[in-house]
Image (cartoon, rainbow, N blue to C red):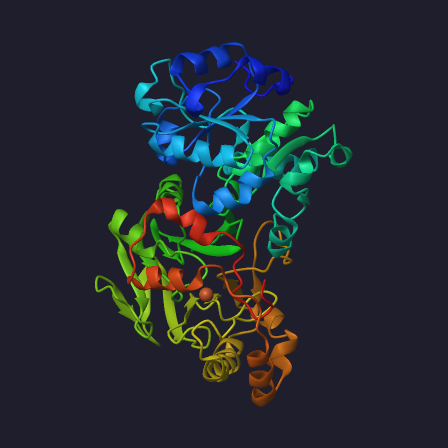
Length: 485
Ligand SMILES: [Fe+2]
């Protein structure tokens, strides 16, 4: 069955006039059988959708924001059928959409009344984030990333190399010339809804494309592991590529310590298994504000111990608290704790076997951490200066620095993001006196990470969350350095 087609819907409309916005299961099956071009939006939860949906239906989020941002951009001549569990919400939404002038209907009785066969997984006109990432590694130049968000959303953050044509402009012929014919086209937006409408519009004009499943929110969850150090301990750097967050697995004599783990936490378990090793300890450098730490979850599921800084505020009690000068052993290696406040009051850096230092959000490859995310910028800036100059920059100059993030413009070396104390000591901002430093840093107010207050509350243990919420909470760049990248 081909859902995306080039049939003139205007002609079709006269032959198809359902009453009360209703489409019965039989009528919908007939439309599908005839290859009528129509968009079927499945409004149920994504997990439920993936477990079984009508062939060709796409998952759609139908909250107030989606209605506001997408409805006005859908052309009036596209037939839409909404599907939910029982037809109740879908009927109301179809009516609202019709009031916008859209050609919208709903499946009478919803999926409860559908007995015509279902399929599982994502539709073939979509591509999963992991698959896109792999393709981009192999043949980046063969892929055309078409971002259909509004211009202001695109300028806020984007996937490097993507091109912006807002959804409402996709339907204008003059924009088709901007789309190459010799590349694989992937449409993208925050959750995949607008992009899927774009894929539909392109297909109507004979251009094949696929939609990034889960959109930029899904993209923000891709984890990419790279072996950074082969020796003992082996160090694997795991990057959340959509955000530039960096986490680490240190493996020594079959024992693993994980630093700043991200979601999805299963990735770390899988890597440990691949390396015949066992996760024994899980540790954060600080209470993160831009992404959810999976430290608690990973420690629980891997039956290992979770360590956190004793100087952060926690609403949990099941962790081991760490302070300056303590050591943690794993395999044949030793991790030494240095208190380096300034980004948060309890920020810790970890020196491993006196060769490597994990600096969290205090010292980056290209920049330093920002002191303003706890609203005490001046006080924290002074501490940040002391942590940098009196502690980190006092380490041997060849110590390898592994930070918790990298900026959007920073390039890796052989896929690894790191520097040395000597390299980092050359940052311009580190040449200033303490007074100049505080004045300059306090005066810099780059945009804050999206949802940072909620993320802090979750990481602190004050607010519960579900795994399904993570992509939305984490969408957008990391914004933990003073450069705002
Ligand atoms: Fe941070």
